[in-house]
Amino acid sequence: MAVLTILSRIKGMIGEARFGVLMEFLRFGVVGTIGFVVDTAVLYAGLALGLGLYGGRAVSYLVAATTTWALNRLWTFRGRGDGPVHQQWALFLLVNLIGFAMNYGTYAALIIFVPLVAAHPVLGVAAGAIAGMFGNFVLSRQLVFRARGT
Image (cartoon, rainbow, N blue to C red; front, side, top):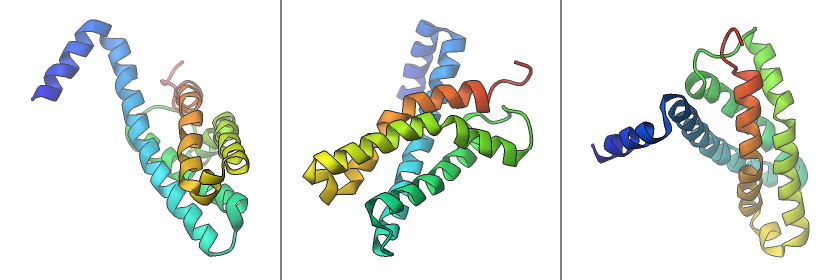
């Protein structure tokens, strides 16, 4: 009940349209958290299979990006976006290359320059996820899951 009261107050302060964007961003964040867990689990599986810190991360990113695309399609931006599913997935991966560059660049820089992160790659995954999150939200909302007819 208290959460609903807080959300109602926020909605009153910022207006209906901004509140809708805020709620999308919060759902995007939840999906991103799930993606982070998938990313980390696949990275550690890749490390166990001998893929190394960089190869394992490339595989883990692709699996996590596919997971977040599916969840964003089903929940965050439900009913938005045009075209066949495979094209939307490809567009999601394409436009999120900017976020990927920020994500992977942050991860790689920390692995190289911070021994603690090299010893505990999950820290680099977390820092990378945060670095790429904001760009990914804007690009996903405006290009991949744009409102129909815009």
